[in-house]
Image 1 (cartoon, rainbow, N blue to C red):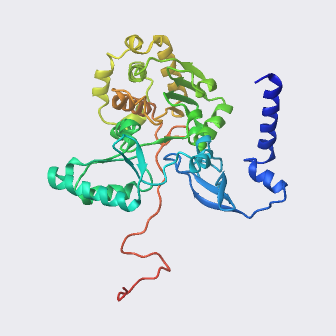
Image 2: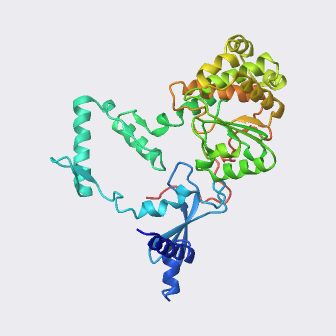
Image 3: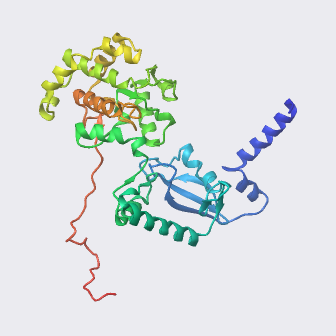
Amino acid sequence: MNRREFLKLTGTAGAVLTAGELGVPALARAAGKESAEQRIPTLCEMCTSRCGIFAVVENGKVTRIEGNPDHPTNLGRPCARGNAGVSALYDPDRLKRPMKRGADGKFQPISWEQAFEEIGAKLTEIKLKYAPETVAFIEYNNLNSTLTKRFIEAYGSPNHTGHAANCFANRNVGYSAVFGTLPTVDYKNVKYYLSPGRNLLGGIKVYEVAGLAEAKNHGAKIVVLDPRYSELATWGEWLPIKSAGDLALLLAIANVLITENLYNKEWVAAHCNGLEQTKAEIVQYTPEWQVQHTDIPAEKVREIARDMAKAAPAAVVDPGWHGGNGMYWNGFEAARAGAIVNALLGNWGAKGGLKGSPKVALGTIDTPPEGAVVDSGGGG
């Protein structure tokens, strides 16, 4: 392709894209083929955030995705992954019916009836021959997971799991071990934000990005620990840490906070147990010790700890998805170390710190809500 052909092709593509949000519907309308448009409220299934969206439908086909401005996660702005939902829906390689591997090793489509019959027969055979506990149901967590878990329990097996073991399980358990629950961050009010391995700008929660952008505009310090130069690293100071080194660095930060008496003594005394044991254990994890595991200078670690203490309680170690690179062998301890640093900063419930999930007022099971119709019995 020569330069003239390339410019001609890109010019045509640009005209299509600027004609409308997806091009094709706008061109059809321009040609006089006006069609009824529906905006159907639903949830995005492109990740576990399940943002509120509208599926825009024309002539029975989804043409684009729009964000629901009333949804707290995406604030009416679908991310790139959410917008790709239309492409996933109409992908020619999308599986729409059961497939069975043949003798040649290739998959061939079969009917739902055949699939139900063969799977049911195989599950019955395994249960009778080996016991139901030999079967595990492994899936990506979705809105049907409660049903699939109930199915495998009814079958007689406790083995239901999802992708959490390869993603956020270390973080959940580590933070729950310290705080009793999994917190999130008050992003828009944070003054010092330390991100161990989380790339918020390459992530999937619009409200978090919007909040951190607001904090950045108000002068928040952003420090990114990541072996690679991520998108988020462009927003602040990038520290190219060694893989799996987050635990060592977080322990060294805790060391400085404790040995230099920079931690929030009042908050820790009121809310924490085991401080004396922590003090006795943490002395060995010095900023000098962590260098071998991180390649980050000892004085930089001291600087981080001191600056976080000055900004506290509006200073946080982001639990993120992995709590301090929970994908590594030491992920649980890294998550727990991050939670301990947050506790030493006394940022739980503080403006710009960590916060728990909001509570929803619920009635009791024996008290129907006002105006509810109660079945007095006799129904079918």
